[in-house]
Amino acid sequence: MTVLDTRALNRATLARQLLLDRSGRPVLDAITHLGGLQAQEPQEPFTGLWSRLRAFEPAALDRLLTGREVVRTHLMRRTVHLVAAGDALAWRSRHDAMLVQRVLGTYRAELAGVDFAELAAAGREVLADGEPRTMGELARALAGRWPGPGPRPLGELLVAALIPVVQVPPRGLWRAKAGARYAPMPDWLGGGITPGPGPGPAGNPGPARETGPATGADPAGEAMARRYLAAYGPAATADLRAWSGLAGLPAAVAALRPELVSFRDGQGRELLDLPDAPRPDAGTPAPVRFLPAFDNAVLGYADRSRIIDDDHRGLSVTGARMVLLDGRVSATWTAGPGTVTVQPLRELSRAGRDAVAEEGEQLAAFLSGSDSGTVRFTPVR
Image 1 (spheres, rainbow, N blue to C red):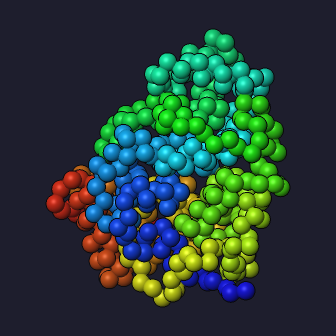
Image 2: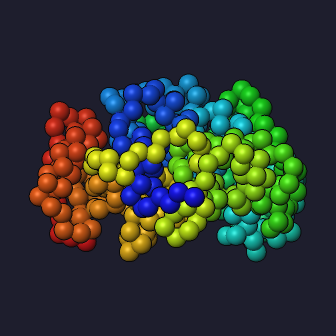
Image 3: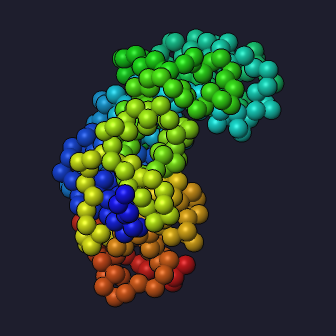
Protein backbone atom coordinates (compact mmCIF):
# COMPACT_ATOMS: atom_id res chain seq x y z
CA MET A 1 0.00 0.00 0.00
CA THR A 2 1.41 3.40 -0.99
CA VAL A 3 2.64 5.53 1.91
CA LEU A 4 1.87 9.26 1.74
CA ASP A 5 4.16 11.45 3.80
CA THR A 6 3.08 14.58 5.60
CA ARG A 7 4.02 16.89 2.74
CA ALA A 8 2.07 14.83 0.19
CA LEU A 9 -0.98 14.90 2.47
CA ASN A 10 -0.54 18.63 2.93
CA ARG A 11 -0.62 19.29 -0.79
CA ALA A 12 -3.66 17.05 -1.22
CA THR A 13 -5.46 18.98 1.52
CA LEU A 14 -4.58 22.34 0.01
CA ALA A 15 -5.82 21.22 -3.40
CA ARG A 16 -9.10 19.85 -2.04
CA GLN A 17 -9.65 22.92 0.13
CA LEU A 18 -9.12 25.30 -2.83
CA LEU A 19 -6.06 26.71 -1.09
CA LEU A 20 -3.39 25.56 -3.54
CA ASP A 21 -4.86 27.59 -6.40
CA ARG A 22 -7.72 30.01 -5.99
CA SER A 23 -10.77 28.60 -7.73
CA GLY A 24 -13.07 30.23 -10.25
CA ARG A 25 -16.07 28.30 -8.88
CA PRO A 26 -19.24 30.20 -8.05
CA VAL A 27 -19.62 30.81 -4.32
CA LEU A 28 -22.43 28.28 -3.92
CA ASP A 29 -20.41 25.59 -5.69
CA ALA A 30 -17.43 26.27 -3.43
CA ILE A 31 -19.52 26.04 -0.24
CA THR A 32 -21.06 22.81 -1.50
CA HIS A 33 -17.70 21.32 -2.43
CA LEU A 34 -16.25 22.14 0.99
CA GLY A 35 -19.19 20.57 2.79
CA GLY A 36 -19.82 23.94 4.40
CA LEU A 37 -17.65 26.37 6.34
CA GLN A 38 -17.55 26.56 10.11
CA ALA A 39 -19.23 29.84 10.94
CA GLN A 40 -19.94 30.43 14.61
CA GLU A 41 -18.07 33.71 14.11
CA PRO A 42 -20.38 35.32 11.50
CA GLN A 43 -17.78 37.26 9.50
CA GLU A 44 -15.14 34.54 9.25
CA PRO A 45 -16.55 32.71 6.19
CA PHE A 46 -15.94 35.83 4.10
CA THR A 47 -12.20 35.52 4.73
CA GLY A 48 -12.34 31.79 4.14
CA LEU A 49 -13.95 32.29 0.74
CA TRP A 50 -11.69 35.22 -0.17
CA SER A 51 -8.66 32.99 0.39
CA ARG A 52 -10.14 30.26 -1.80
CA LEU A 53 -11.88 32.03 -4.70
CA ARG A 54 -10.73 34.39 -7.40
CA ALA A 55 -12.45 37.79 -7.38
CA PHE A 56 -14.69 36.88 -4.43
CA GLU A 57 -17.30 39.54 -3.70
CA PRO A 58 -19.01 39.55 -0.27
CA ALA A 59 -22.28 40.57 -1.93
CA ALA A 60 -22.38 37.18 -3.63
CA LEU A 61 -22.55 35.41 -0.28
CA ASP A 62 -25.07 37.94 1.02
CA ARG A 63 -27.33 37.14 -1.94
CA LEU A 64 -27.11 33.43 -1.22
CA LEU A 65 -28.06 33.98 2.42
CA THR A 66 -30.97 36.32 1.74
CA GLY A 67 -32.04 34.14 -1.20
CA ARG A 68 -32.09 31.11 1.13
CA GLU A 69 -29.65 29.13 -1.00
CA VAL A 70 -27.22 28.80 1.90
CA VAL A 71 -28.02 28.79 5.60
CA ARG A 72 -26.33 29.05 8.97
CA THR A 73 -27.26 26.14 11.22
CA HIS A 74 -25.91 23.83 13.91
CA LEU A 75 -24.59 20.75 12.18
CA MET A 76 -21.15 19.09 12.23
CA ARG A 77 -19.69 18.87 15.76
CA ARG A 78 -22.69 20.92 17.01
CA THR A 79 -21.03 24.05 15.68
CA VAL A 80 -22.68 26.61 13.45
CA HIS A 81 -21.85 25.92 9.81
CA LEU A 82 -22.59 27.82 6.64
CA VAL A 83 -23.94 25.13 4.30
CA ALA A 84 -25.86 24.84 1.05
CA ALA A 85 -29.60 24.60 1.59
CA GLY A 86 -29.77 21.16 0.00
CA ASP A 87 -27.07 19.83 2.31
CA ALA A 88 -28.83 21.25 5.36
CA LEU A 89 -32.04 19.39 4.47
CA ALA A 90 -30.23 16.18 3.48
CA TRP A 91 -27.81 15.98 6.40
CA ARG A 92 -29.68 17.38 9.37
CA SER A 93 -31.45 14.17 10.46
CA ARG A 94 -28.17 12.24 10.30
CA HIS A 95 -26.86 14.59 13.02
CA ASP A 96 -29.93 14.58 15.28
CA ALA A 97 -28.76 12.16 17.96
CA MET A 98 -25.24 13.59 18.06
CA LEU A 99 -26.58 17.11 18.53
CA VAL A 100 -28.71 16.00 21.48
CA GLN A 101 -25.86 14.08 23.06
CA ARG A 102 -23.51 17.06 22.81
CA VAL A 103 -26.03 19.35 24.48
CA LEU A 104 -26.52 16.74 27.20
CA GLY A 105 -22.75 16.60 27.63
CA THR A 106 -22.99 20.14 28.96
CA TYR A 107 -26.45 20.23 30.55
CA ARG A 108 -27.32 16.63 31.46
CA ALA A 109 -28.05 17.40 35.10
CA GLU A 110 -30.16 20.49 34.33
CA LEU A 111 -32.22 18.64 31.71
CA ALA A 112 -32.84 15.47 33.73
CA GLY A 113 -36.52 14.58 33.66
CA VAL A 114 -37.41 16.81 30.70
CA ASP A 115 -39.52 15.03 28.09
CA PHE A 116 -37.76 15.96 24.86
CA ALA A 117 -40.68 15.10 22.60
CA GLU A 118 -43.00 17.33 24.60
CA LEU A 119 -40.47 20.16 24.71
CA ALA A 120 -39.81 19.94 20.96
CA ALA A 121 -43.55 20.03 20.19
CA ALA A 122 -44.01 23.07 22.42
CA GLY A 123 -41.08 24.83 20.78
CA ARG A 124 -42.50 24.20 17.32
CA GLU A 125 -45.82 25.65 18.44
CA VAL A 126 -44.09 28.87 19.51
CA LEU A 127 -42.31 29.14 16.16
CA ALA A 128 -45.39 28.24 14.13
CA ASP A 129 -46.40 31.89 13.78
CA GLY A 130 -43.52 32.43 11.34
CA GLU A 131 -41.74 34.99 13.53
CA PRO A 132 -38.01 34.26 14.01
CA ARG A 133 -36.94 34.34 17.64
CA THR A 134 -33.73 34.50 19.60
CA MET A 135 -32.75 31.52 21.68
CA GLY A 136 -33.59 33.48 24.82
CA GLU A 137 -37.03 34.45 23.54
CA LEU A 138 -37.85 30.86 22.68
CA ALA A 139 -36.63 29.56 26.03
CA ARG A 140 -38.51 32.19 28.01
CA ALA A 141 -41.72 31.36 26.16
CA LEU A 142 -41.46 27.83 27.53
CA ALA A 143 -39.84 28.48 30.91
CA GLY A 144 -43.20 28.50 32.67
CA ARG A 145 -43.79 24.86 31.71
CA TRP A 146 -40.17 23.83 32.37
CA PRO A 147 -38.88 26.12 35.13
CA GLY A 148 -36.23 23.73 36.43
CA PRO A 149 -33.51 23.71 33.76
CA GLY A 150 -33.25 27.47 33.30
CA PRO A 151 -33.41 29.36 29.99
CA ARG A 152 -29.89 28.60 28.75
CA PRO A 153 -30.11 24.77 28.83
CA LEU A 154 -33.65 24.88 27.43
CA GLY A 155 -32.68 27.27 24.67
CA GLU A 156 -29.58 25.38 23.59
CA LEU A 157 -31.42 22.05 23.56
CA LEU A 158 -34.15 23.55 21.39
CA VAL A 159 -32.13 25.48 18.79
CA ALA A 160 -29.00 23.32 18.68
CA ALA A 161 -30.64 19.90 18.76
CA LEU A 162 -34.38 19.28 19.05
CA ILE A 163 -35.75 21.64 16.39
CA PRO A 164 -33.99 21.97 13.04
CA VAL A 165 -33.63 25.74 12.71
CA VAL A 166 -31.53 28.24 10.78
CA GLN A 167 -30.10 31.58 11.82
CA VAL A 168 -31.86 34.12 9.61
CA PRO A 169 -30.28 37.25 8.08
CA PRO A 170 -29.09 39.86 8.80
CA ARG A 171 -27.02 37.50 10.96
CA GLY A 172 -24.05 36.46 8.85
CA LEU A 173 -24.26 39.21 6.24
CA TRP A 174 -21.15 41.20 5.31
CA ARG A 175 -20.26 43.66 8.08
CA ALA A 176 -23.66 43.15 9.71
CA LYS A 177 -23.86 43.17 13.49
CA ALA A 178 -26.96 41.22 14.37
CA GLY A 179 -27.89 38.69 17.00
CA ALA A 180 -28.92 35.15 16.15
CA ARG A 181 -32.63 34.71 15.45
CA TYR A 182 -33.98 31.31 14.54
CA ALA A 183 -36.63 30.03 12.15
CA PRO A 184 -37.63 26.40 11.43
CA MET A 185 -35.45 25.01 8.66
CA PRO A 186 -38.27 23.46 6.58
CA ASP A 187 -40.28 26.69 6.69
CA TRP A 188 -37.30 28.87 5.79
CA LEU A 189 -36.19 26.64 2.93
CA GLY A 190 -39.60 25.51 1.73
CA GLY A 191 -38.60 21.86 1.73
CA GLY A 192 -38.74 18.78 3.88
CA ILE A 193 -35.84 17.37 5.86
CA THR A 194 -34.63 13.99 4.63
CA PRO A 195 -35.58 11.36 7.26
CA GLY A 196 -32.72 9.91 9.25
CA PRO A 197 -31.85 6.27 9.84
CA GLY A 198 -33.65 6.04 13.16
CA PRO A 199 -36.08 7.84 15.50
CA GLY A 200 -35.73 11.59 15.70
CA PRO A 201 -34.01 13.38 18.57
CA ALA A 202 -37.12 13.97 20.62
CA GLY A 203 -37.07 10.52 22.18
CA ASN A 204 -34.36 11.15 24.79
CA PRO A 205 -31.74 9.02 23.02
CA GLY A 206 -29.09 7.28 25.06
CA PRO A 207 -25.37 7.45 24.34
CA ALA A 208 -25.48 4.57 21.85
CA ARG A 209 -27.73 6.53 19.53
CA GLU A 210 -24.87 8.82 18.47
CA THR A 211 -23.18 6.10 16.49
CA GLY A 212 -25.96 5.76 13.95
CA PRO A 213 -26.56 2.44 12.24
CA ALA A 214 -23.71 -0.04 12.44
CA THR A 215 -25.25 -2.11 9.66
CA GLY A 216 -27.76 -1.54 6.92
CA ALA A 217 -28.16 1.26 4.43
CA ASP A 218 -27.07 4.76 5.37
CA PRO A 219 -27.48 6.87 2.21
CA ALA A 220 -27.06 10.20 4.01
CA GLY A 221 -23.92 8.91 5.70
CA GLU A 222 -22.56 7.64 2.38
CA ALA A 223 -23.13 11.00 0.74
CA MET A 224 -21.41 12.79 3.62
CA ALA A 225 -18.43 10.41 3.58
CA ARG A 226 -18.01 10.77 -0.17
CA ARG A 227 -18.19 14.56 0.08
CA TYR A 228 -15.77 14.58 2.99
CA LEU A 229 -13.16 12.65 1.02
CA ALA A 230 -13.62 14.95 -1.96
CA ALA A 231 -12.78 18.00 0.18
CA TYR A 232 -10.41 16.53 2.80
CA GLY A 233 -8.99 13.22 1.56
CA PRO A 234 -6.98 11.14 1.71
CA ALA A 235 -8.20 10.68 5.27
CA ALA A 236 -8.78 8.08 7.98
CA THR A 237 -12.16 7.19 9.41
CA ALA A 238 -11.01 8.96 12.60
CA ASP A 239 -10.64 12.14 10.54
CA LEU A 240 -14.17 11.74 9.17
CA ARG A 241 -15.39 11.34 12.73
CA ALA A 242 -13.52 14.45 13.86
CA TRP A 243 -15.04 16.55 11.06
CA SER A 244 -18.61 15.36 11.39
CA GLY A 245 -18.89 14.68 15.11
CA LEU A 246 -20.50 11.36 14.20
CA ALA A 247 -19.00 8.06 15.25
CA GLY A 248 -17.16 7.12 12.11
CA LEU A 249 -20.16 6.35 9.87
CA PRO A 250 -19.20 2.65 9.82
CA ALA A 251 -22.01 1.44 7.56
CA ALA A 252 -21.41 4.27 5.12
CA VAL A 253 -17.67 3.66 4.92
CA ALA A 254 -18.20 -0.08 4.51
CA ALA A 255 -20.63 0.50 1.65
CA LEU A 256 -18.22 2.89 -0.09
CA ARG A 257 -15.06 0.79 0.25
CA PRO A 258 -15.35 -0.96 -3.13
CA GLU A 259 -15.18 2.41 -4.90
CA LEU A 260 -12.33 3.87 -2.80
CA VAL A 261 -8.55 3.60 -2.90
CA SER A 262 -6.37 3.12 0.17
CA PHE A 263 -3.05 4.54 1.34
CA ARG A 264 -1.01 4.61 4.55
CA ASP A 265 0.38 7.61 6.35
CA GLY A 266 3.71 7.73 8.13
CA GLN A 267 2.15 6.31 11.31
CA GLY A 268 0.65 3.35 9.46
CA ARG A 269 -2.94 4.56 9.56
CA GLU A 270 -5.15 3.54 6.67
CA LEU A 271 -6.26 6.51 4.59
CA LEU A 272 -9.21 6.30 2.21
CA ASP A 273 -9.80 8.41 -0.87
CA LEU A 274 -11.77 8.82 -4.04
CA PRO A 275 -9.77 7.33 -6.92
CA ASP A 276 -9.86 10.36 -9.21
CA ALA A 277 -9.45 13.10 -6.57
CA PRO A 278 -6.39 15.37 -6.90
CA ARG A 279 -3.23 14.31 -5.09
CA PRO A 280 -0.56 16.80 -6.23
CA ASP A 281 3.12 16.07 -6.15
CA ALA A 282 4.62 16.79 -2.74
CA GLY A 283 6.98 19.29 -4.34
CA THR A 284 4.17 21.49 -5.68
CA PRO A 285 4.71 25.10 -4.50
CA ALA A 286 2.11 26.34 -2.02
CA PRO A 287 1.21 30.04 -1.82
CA VAL A 288 0.64 32.00 1.37
CA ARG A 289 -2.96 31.75 2.55
CA PHE A 290 -4.71 33.51 5.44
CA LEU A 291 -7.27 31.30 7.21
CA PRO A 292 -10.18 32.57 9.29
CA ALA A 293 -10.95 31.43 12.82
CA PHE A 294 -11.96 27.77 13.14
CA ASP A 295 -11.25 26.96 9.49
CA ASN A 296 -12.11 23.37 8.63
CA ALA A 297 -8.86 22.97 6.69
CA VAL A 298 -7.33 22.60 10.16
CA LEU A 299 -10.26 21.41 12.29
CA GLY A 300 -11.47 18.81 9.79
CA TYR A 301 -9.01 16.12 10.93
CA ALA A 302 -8.26 14.06 14.02
CA ASP A 303 -4.59 14.04 13.01
CA ARG A 304 -3.84 17.63 12.04
CA SER A 305 -0.11 17.12 11.59
CA ARG A 306 -0.48 17.47 7.81
CA ILE A 307 -1.11 21.19 8.26
CA ILE A 308 -0.15 22.27 11.81
CA ASP A 309 2.64 21.24 14.19
CA ASP A 310 1.58 19.46 17.36
CA ASP A 311 3.15 22.27 19.42
CA HIS A 312 0.63 24.69 17.92
CA ARG A 313 -2.40 22.38 17.73
CA GLY A 314 -4.13 24.23 20.55
CA LEU A 315 -4.46 27.31 18.35
CA SER A 316 -7.01 25.47 16.22
CA VAL A 317 -9.59 25.40 19.00
CA THR A 318 -9.01 28.86 20.50
CA GLY A 319 -10.25 30.83 17.51
CA ALA A 320 -6.83 31.96 16.36
CA ARG A 321 -6.69 33.03 12.73
CA MET A 322 -3.80 31.33 11.01
CA VAL A 323 -1.36 31.99 8.17
CA LEU A 324 -0.20 29.16 5.94
CA LEU A 325 3.36 29.44 4.61
CA ASP A 326 4.53 26.59 2.40
CA GLY A 327 1.24 24.95 3.29
CA ARG A 328 1.72 24.89 7.06
CA VAL A 329 0.47 27.05 9.91
CA SER A 330 3.37 29.42 10.50
CA ALA A 331 1.76 32.52 12.05
CA THR A 332 -1.42 33.95 13.47
CA TRP A 333 -3.08 37.17 12.45
CA THR A 334 -5.55 39.81 13.58
CA ALA A 335 -7.18 42.66 11.71
CA GLY A 336 -7.67 46.33 12.44
CA PRO A 337 -8.74 49.29 10.30
CA GLY A 338 -6.81 48.86 7.06
CA THR A 339 -4.17 46.74 8.79
CA VAL A 340 -3.41 43.07 9.28
CA THR A 341 -1.08 42.23 12.16
CA VAL A 342 0.90 39.00 11.80
CA GLN A 343 2.54 37.18 14.70
CA PRO A 344 4.96 34.49 13.43
CA LEU A 345 5.17 31.17 15.24
CA ARG A 346 8.79 30.78 14.12
CA GLU A 347 11.45 32.93 12.49
CA LEU A 348 10.50 33.58 8.87
CA SER A 349 12.95 33.84 6.02
CA ARG A 350 13.11 37.13 4.15
CA ALA A 351 11.31 35.56 1.19
CA GLY A 352 8.67 34.05 3.46
CA ARG A 353 8.10 37.33 5.29
CA ASP A 354 7.77 39.19 1.99
CA ALA A 355 5.24 36.65 0.69
CA VAL A 356 3.18 36.91 3.89
CA ALA A 357 3.28 40.70 3.70
CA GLU A 358 2.12 40.74 0.08
CA GLU A 359 -0.87 38.48 0.73
CA GLY A 360 -1.65 40.26 4.00
CA GLU A 361 -1.79 43.64 2.28
CA GLN A 362 -4.40 42.32 -0.14
CA LEU A 363 -6.41 40.85 2.73
CA ALA A 364 -6.26 44.12 4.67
CA ALA A 365 -7.57 45.96 1.61
CA PHE A 366 -10.39 43.42 1.21
CA LEU A 367 -11.47 43.59 4.84
CA SER A 368 -11.38 47.40 4.93
CA GLY A 369 -12.95 47.94 1.52
CA SER A 370 -10.03 50.12 0.39
CA ASP A 371 -7.60 50.00 -2.49
CA SER A 372 -4.63 49.11 -0.31
CA GLY A 373 -3.76 47.79 3.11
CA THR A 374 -0.80 47.48 5.41
CA VAL A 375 0.79 44.59 7.30
CA ARG A 376 2.51 44.79 10.65
CA PHE A 377 4.67 42.00 12.10
CA THR A 378 5.05 41.35 15.82
CA PRO A 379 7.82 39.28 17.47
CA VAL A 380 7.74 35.51 17.22
CA ARG A 381 5.05 34.06 19.44
